[in-house]
Image 1 (tube, rainbow over the protein chains, first blue to last red):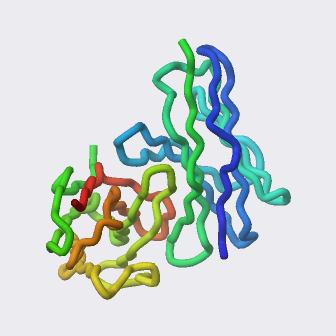
Image 2: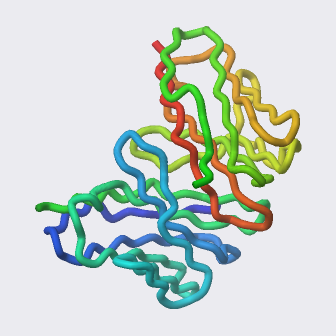
Image 3: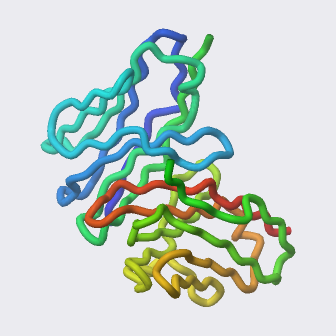
Length: 111
Length: 113
């Protein structure tokens, strides 16, 4: 069964710190990876996508992908209280544009 | 900005009643997904459409759930009869051609009493 694991959490960091969120996936066929942010009671919002090994930066967010080790991470620099949310990792299943989602990591940024 | 529309936003229904959710994807998006999300879990795919055709409904409880996308645009998900365990957030998402990037609507929070 294809799985996306997000086992660390909940995570609490002080304002201004770097938050590091990790995710592993089981299916080596997966080529596309996504991070979604979900505020309490709201729907997921796509914030990052990454397809190649290495780092991808967008503002305060950096996604990192290591296909050999089958892990994806999201770094949030200069964390703000508004970053407090659940972050979902998703990976493609290699067929039909289908994604498998992890259960999410809840991040709390302390003022 | 293009968005996925869903209605209703909230629904409270009694056990054994019928309930329906509606979704209108981002204009031009051929692929439409219905997910169910239980609190503390990630979204789980119920059904995926490519235009008007079902691509994947392997996790749809077909004894009580049905979904359609008759003209390949908007879609309806129905539950009949609703059970207590169906209480969850029902999310609709869409993606463009040959893209894995899925964009979610606001969701429908269903409470079955």
